[in-house]
Image (cartoon, rainbow, N blue to C red; front, top):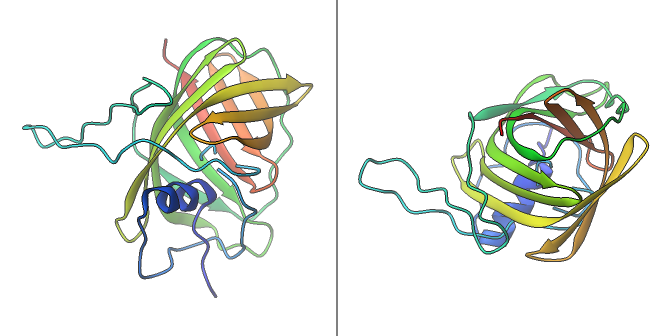
Length: 200
């Protein structure tokens, strides 16, 4: 069965001119066109650069032209779940910087559960309706790309609309859940869900 490259990873790698010879693992369905990683519902691949490596051997993950938000937080292995994504419950989204803490793909009943083979590390920043995201994606083959975006996030009940204006204009239709300092954003087109925890 042919495997599917997660939506954000595919868009970011395409935008950076990266690729991999073997198709990465899971999930077995194709996604609609669009953005990252949160998360995508239509367009918006990553900008920015792949980052240099300083003398201590760790990657320099400063942000690009769309935002000065750096990458932070742990590396998260995306998990595939053989179910449909639950609807969000909404809530008041607090301003601040959030680190990525969970990455899930809901592949439906026929999906093979387990790791997708794609890792994510990143952060978002919210100030009113201003929304910024900087994510580093590593595929099963070892290809690495960054998605650096900025735009707005507007909400309507349990649903939201992310409108990217940098590096390109694009939109993502999402549902979301707030639980204190925790925020889960699920793309209702690609069925990818990303959890974040507010750190400041």
